[in-house]
Length: 270
Image (cartoon, rainbow, N blue to C red):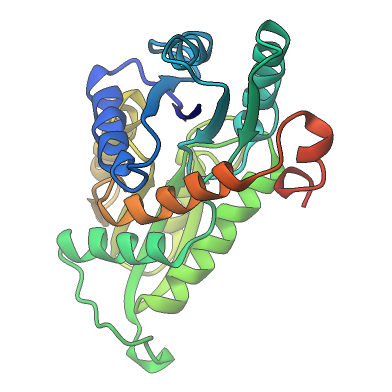
């Protein structure tokens, strides 16, 4: 029997974990033919992956499609989750596993970022802006951060797409952990730019400690400069992402079974 196991990152803030669960509930409806659909977390919250797999198997699962509910392809998606799947394969040799991919670079996410900017008060149009239409405004895109250069380069690509489709002069990127520029360095960069208005966009799926930390840093910087820092909503589990995740689920359902040698020919090594 087929099962789907959604794996979120997990947060110390329970509201963030609740957001993931609610988002998964919406996504389940895209695959009503799969009766067993469970949600678990990589870290910081329960159930963990071991318990998620066990719950699927207790319901009769013999094939489990594992889907990471993550924005970018970093070490969690490329190493941590595959290693855990290998452990589960050893524990349950009669169960086959397939593996999906994170959301990655998607046009839908660019539209969500634009919606967050518009909600924060920025004037936007549907059309791609001409250069002379650009406003003296800076954007600071704040990622979670990873030691994996592939993940950081993906966020740089997303920043460029945001610049292409929003009427601003500058888009900078910084990270909350694991790499540079960090948030302090990112804020210093936009402070040196001539633009007086800076929209700060948290490239995060859920609320949590990172959002609380970012809010405190912006409050401190607002006292140190005359620039206007406007904090946008984080991406959140926007309903428009349901279709993206549903596509990732379908890919996982159709993927070659684990182990890693199959994955190596797929997106992990692209």
